[in-house]
Length: 329
Image 1 (spheres, helix red, strand yellow):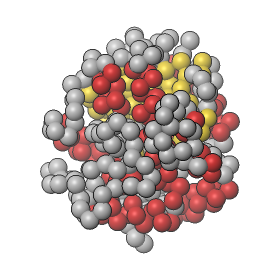
Image 2: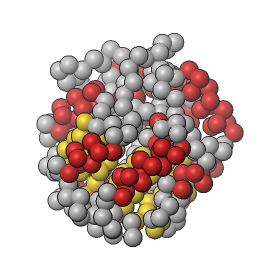
Image 3: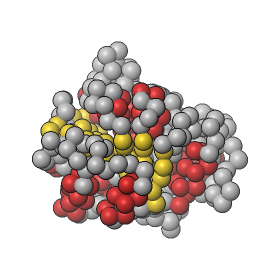
Image 4: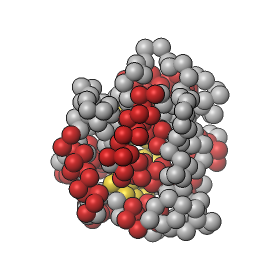
């Protein structure tokens, strides 16, 4: 469940010259990040020390994990030496991955602020959400409305161990009330919805968050079908938020092909128009499906700069990560 989001970033490339045998489920992605706004790209993580501290019982930190690698890129504190080494190696070989992580996280912050604020959504289902600390969905939403309920869905055992440990520690997880985790695979829509229903009232509007996970589904039709099934189960007034890397930028496409050729779990980029098709039948919120830095940028940060959005993206980086939010009529 780590935004993971174990995902796209690199299973098989997590240790120098070695492939990982473990493949987490599709409900994962990148890890959590900073408290409110992602740190700029210039500061991927503290150097020289591992803020993760003593790992939770039963958690092997001798091998890098994608969620903790993502956490490092976001300037978080839930990573260990192996994760830092893997993150730095991946950043050298595939620099677009860290940029994608930051762009998606900056979008998440703005999207959840919009959903919990002007849109007045009080329930969130975040599939492949990342470590439950610093700047994840529940922290952002509950700052605006403490009564918000959040369900994270994932089936990566390491992510669930982290999640339970962090939520039991009030110093690391600011407001754990109303937050729960579902052990379910994205491809098992019935299990995801059944688990969510134990915490959320699926008769009331829900914001479905899907960041950095759709590329785990190599079949475009299957990915659209799963997204549609999830939204069909939610009532009118619900929202869908998606962010993902897209094909179309030559250098990024080339890097992703090299990455997929070496990774145990490849990630499939889609064209911007294909990403937009996941919102068919829904009412897109302005400005539509756009590069992440251009979706409702904070007033003090212009699109494509490293201002308040925290994306730190230039024109080339913008082309590689798109996002959108839409309402079910």
